[in-house]
Length: 141
Image 1 (cartoon, rainbow, N blue to C red):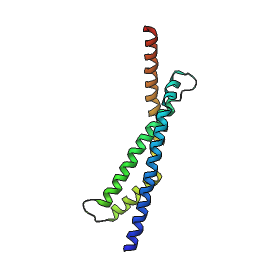
Image 2 (cartoon, helix red, strand yellow):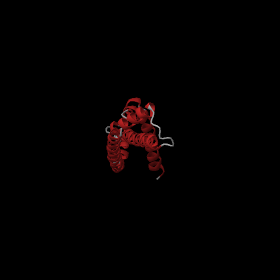
Image 3 (cartoon, rainbow, N blue to C red):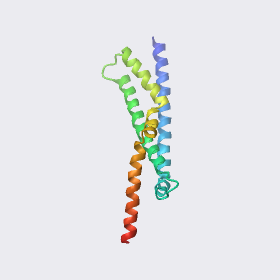
Image 4 (tube, rainbow, N blue to C red):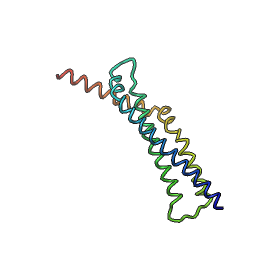
């Protein structure tokens, strides 16, 4: 029984290391999105190459993915160090599922932002407001 529990602990440690690496990549990706945000904002004014919609959806996808990954990690920690350390079959299955989700990542977030058009409609509203503000500044300047 001790060798089985030791193997499970090694697997969970590997998953925690994978989680740490994924968080580093997500944060670097957000930094990159912050660096290219001026070009996305400038492209709102261009009529033929508006990259702001893609930037907006990718930014929302990264933020939601980070929140869901951290929530999954909190679930793993809670199962392993909860108040009652009784490992039922339900908790064990939930532990395996959350660990797989930590490695694979919630793919639903990216498809959600690209399929529903929620990010696109929000970006179009923001782009229209920015364009109107620019026109007002040019008129009254």
